[in-house]
Length: 289
Image (cartoon, rainbow, N blue to C red; front, side, top):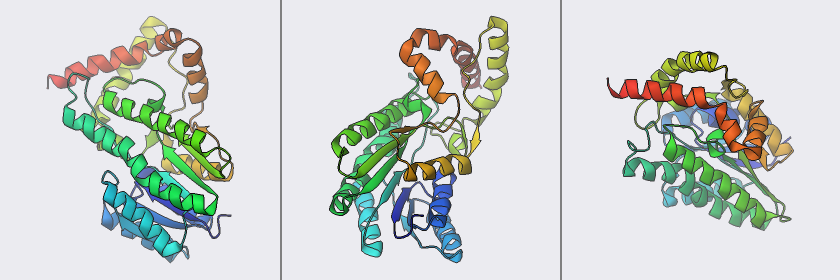
């Protein structure tokens, strides 16, 4: 049980973050919920406290250093400590490289990368006083593999993975753990709120094309588990709190595909050709609409 522990969760108003808040609270920890959508945060915090657990909603935009530092300070002021920091806030975008504007590139890095420093620096100061802690950064399989029409998001999530690895090196034998989580598809509103427009029509239209091209070319697609519920992914992250690992792959087949990439990227990319060609066809079609 996590009785007496305090967890700070960013991006907690929906999806994986909201599910994490509920599950970690059930384990006995006090949860500090952060996001920009105050009403959703307060509703979730009310549900958690109504179930007899401790929860605090803090409206914060973690792309702003002042907000991020205020979040950590508020958690410490209220509960006296921080044991778990989960950097879950994130957002994607939908555009080819040539269609990706400077503003989108900046936005992707502000939320998915810069915010990691803004929350982690003050949290580490507190954790080092306590001599223990766990920082969990939610990246994506896009932090390990290149996907088309998400270049700025892919680059940002690769940076998230690299940040976590560097952080782990700095924290070795300090009693503080660092984990990066790399989910594949998760049933959240992620695809509907991407910058550049919803990706749902893109995914819906490209699926049949990808399957047709794979069949025509006799190519086996990467054997990665399909879309999973947010509760399932959150549950795996909670188990990781009890048994920290360097990298958490939440979908079966993910780690195996990454090993293939590490051994021979060109060979691994052959399995992605139907995906690449199918999504290119659909992207070009949607651009003409």
